[in-house]
Structure formats: structure tokens, C-alpha cells
Amino acid sequence: MALRYGFFDSEIVGYDEEGMPQFDRAESSDFLAMFLSCLVRSGVLAIPGDSFQVLAGGGMEVRVRPGFGLVEGRLAYDDEEASIVLEAADAHNRRIDRVILRANYPDRKCEILIRTGTPATDPQPPELVRDGADYFEMCLAEVAVRANQAAVTQADITDTRADTDVCGWVTGLIDQVDTHTLFLQWQAAYQQFYADSGAEFDAWMEELHAILDGDAVSNLMSEIEKNSTAIQEIARELEEKPDAPTIVQATITAAGWTGEDVPYENVMTIEGVTAVSIVEVTLQACPTEEQVTACAGAMLVDGGQVDGSITLRAMGDKPEVDIPITMIIR
Image (cartoon, rainbow, N blue to C red; front, side, top):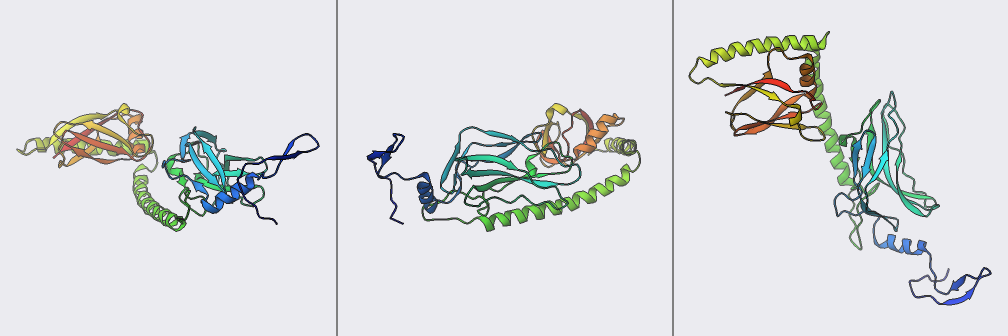
């Protein structure tokens, strides 16, 4: 094969049978792509940090942020956010979908698409196609879809842009950064944290199930009534002491919750609370069934406090009703 080179201005050296001009130094897009791929690594641009980032969009929709990428020397750029809807969840098994940026050689274009995984008890993400003839694919993110899941959350999305084995950042001309190992370390650390947290949550749920065995709401309301009565008796005794704590009746308003994902936060203005106060929180006596259900589903935890206010966090569902509470502040 003769030496290939480019790019220089071409001159017309003749015309074909259809009258189209023929040039003496014409080169194809394949040659330019091959040249760029030797100098610059395939991937997405690392700046800005959300270049082609995949986000939950509500329901089974995911959103792909605007970005720039290089796919084996082919340029891919989108200045608008893309929206893609995943297939409905399987009724029995989980699956893992992939959000893919690929060079489509037969159609002469770059595109973003969803590769739907196969439902299984131990699902694996679908294979990327890199046959060199039809497609070269890079994975922007993996989306875990649970059985009967109706909406994807950000926690279901694993960002794989930093993994050089499936995507990576655009780097060059000389320095090449292999972040595949680092990505695996991040993923292993996250999975270990998730497993440890899950074990603690399961243990807590077992204790809760023991209380909720049978008629869950009725049993929980009975427990709340007993605890509320006990707290009221303690409060009366403490009020007789010189250093008695402050008893505050308050309401966690449904409108006060902020955040789109877990944990949700509700900052309450409470007179008498300081940064070092010890605060106990319980439902007020005689709550409604709806309030009990909302409180149990929210899985409330302490989010910290400062002078004059306390932050509550919902680690489960965001409450949609007001919840009346009693606070004992020491």
C-alpha cells in the first residue's frame, strides 16, 4: 500500500462518468478517525464533570446530560439533554441495563441508546459490541432495575464514565490514564458499605417485624400509645424537678420536607434546642392511622441540630401528611 497522508488542498484531476469531480489528494473520514484515535484516547470529556452523565428522570426515564465524547476517533457532541425511557421491569427478576454511547458505522453516526439486560436472579450487564465493523460502544452508566420496579432512582444508577475498561475520560496526547482499577476499588468499597448497611437495616427490620406481627398498624399504634403514656408520666415527674427538661409539642409538616432523593430533610424551628441538647422524639398520643403509617415508612433519624432548630431525616419514604410529635429537650 502506498503512503497515506493528509490533509492537503486537493485539485480536480478529472470527472467520472456522472460528471462528478475527482480529486488528487482526497482522504476518507476513516483515515482522520484512525489518526485521532492514535493520539487521543476514546471516552467522554472530563470537564465539565457532568459531561454525558446519566441521571434519574422520573418513572422509568433516565436523562443524559449534554456532553462531548470521542469514540475511536469519531466525535460525538450534544448541547442538549437527552431523555430515554427504559423497558418495564420484569415481574420476578432483576436486570441490569446499560446506557451506551456508540459509533454506528453502517449508519455513519454516533448515538446514545439503552441496551436492556436479561432478567435473572444474578443479573449481569449486557455485553458491549466492539466488532470494528459495525459498532464501537462505550458504557456511560449501568442501571439496576428491580422486579416490579416502577421508578428508577439515582441510587439505581452506577456511573461508569470513569471506568477505562468500558468508557473512560478523553486523554492525550501522550499521557494516558488507566482508571479501571481505581473504578473497581470505588465500586468494591461502595458494595461493601451497601452490604454492611443492609445487614444493619435487616436486623432493625427483624425487630420491627416482631412488633408489627399480625395487624401491623394496630400493633404499632398500641406500642405508641403505651410509650406516649409512659413519656407523659415521666414528663410530669420531671417538671417537678428544678432541672426539668423542656417538653415541646410540635408538628413535622409534610410541606417542610426537602430533597428529591433519600435522605429527605425537614428543618424544624424549636425553641430551647441548642447544639448540645439531648432530644428525644416520639409521636403524640392518639395519632391517626395515616400518621402512624407515614412515620413508620419514613424511618426518621437525627440529622443534627443547632441553636433554635433541629433537622430530621427520612431514610425511607417522604411523608405526605403532617406528623404530630412530642420532644423532650435536656
